[in-house]
Length: 319
Image (cartoon, rainbow, N blue to C red; front, side, top):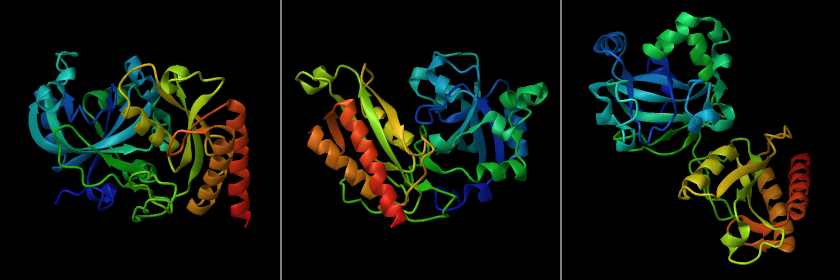
């Protein structure tokens, strides 16, 4: 049986480790090697399927610079062999045409939530001084022992689509801090964070849309910016989700504020809702509601809303 999010992936599969130049399972659905012998070595050493945990190398292209040296996720890799181009999108077919031709098909992919991704040095404190191990990681992959898997086991993750892989079972987040739980229902503010457990610790956050605000609004901005406020266990996941809904261009969502990022603590769902409602009240009064949790407002209004949100969430927590 091939398990997805219905069980603990760390208990079900052998775990190996390798390096990539990026992390885009939706258009790169394989683990590749430079020779048939290296591919055969992996097949001989693993069960079908097995987990291949991925970190993004420090020499990754600039488009992946924010993920360099980060342990970003894992592929569930089958023993199905093929050419690299059989398992990747056409946008990759002309890139480094002599590399990773001897590939194994990935059938599922799991991404660690951005706020919880480990640095390579967190997993391998001596990685930079172990040149032979670094070469093995990139060229062949290495098996991970129970001590290293125990570090990975603590990281919240979710299943994501993989190129030509098995259908996505669901997008639910698995949060080891609270155990396996059912995702919460839609909250009363009118949106969901797909698959996010209601019982997981929450952050308050504020995103800002960077770009020509007057052009976006169709009227003079008059000192206003466009903000998205809300609550989530992973504000960066929310930012990535919103950004992916936009075509490439000059408008970019950035994470402006996060209670977790500011080391200001986490809240329960109810506490975070109280904070979100307080932020909405200030933004609705001092700015312009754009639908959902989107507002046009000055930075001063956003600052006031942020403080009000903290007070309300903290009061609820003290409650």
